[in-house]
Length: 392
Image (cartoon, helix red, strand yellow):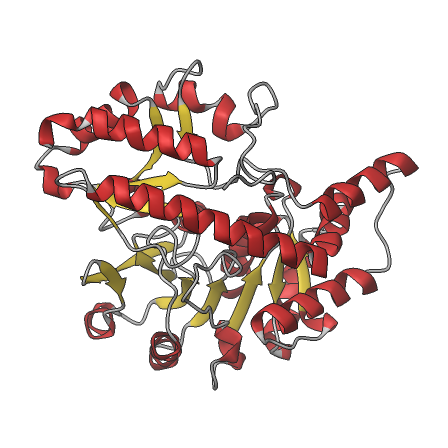
């Protein structure tokens, strides 16, 4: 069955697209026939309601400062209540230049130079980048593998803590492992943060991209954590509008909110009008219907990709509960990282993310972006089978 929303192949070359225009320079994968499966954006148009909002802006033709955020805040409130069962108030909402910026602001506002910031690794690589750039220490708490998926190992992590740690950044759902953390696991995170007096930053940017059969629980719905919790969400991953660099830091606690707000004010940060207009349009019934279709399509891509990986001896794809990012373990091939990576990039002409960039535990993995037309996923699968045909 074809899907006119997601099946068409959109040529992104020559559009200043990091994912495609930088593929050959960074990975050596030729632009002529390469498949970009690294940067976490999608090769799809956003929903029509978002495109229409942008067209209305260009039709007006004046691009001044944005004012009166009531409609924008109401859209966020509607989305969080109707899609996630989480009720918020406008006063809690800060808008940052994306969630990497939001993460950096949290590190700046709530820690000092030399403080430790805890990451459950392997995890999204930008976290460690901003922590190190701020002069803080990255404290890697490795996730454990159980039945082929990541689980939290609080006993081991408790033993690692030295008292210099001041913050934990949670990736929920998890990138790159694709886990949807259970309520019990999230309660464990809350208890861990209380035991070690950590500010908890919960990055939930993938919370709308959850596979059938799984349910995301916002960290804000876990009891007893509000006085140390910073929530982060965005429209950017959900609706493929990452170029707007717009995200939300949502803080219920008044003391934390005042501290964060003062840092934003000191740094002169304010929102960009394009991001606010597009987000307001996206968080709507029309946007919700599009997301439902998107998730069904991504689930189809996931099934095709996982079946192909399962046919290649030595390769294992971690069960994908959320996100569109497949995390593939190559350790069973017995190959070095250099050899299996070369087969993917030089033979199959596919550009994935390299596992070590995600921290401890990622050394023998590659991450593949499945948010692309199904025909490209099928081509990538065929090429991977061919590249590792000697194992079959």
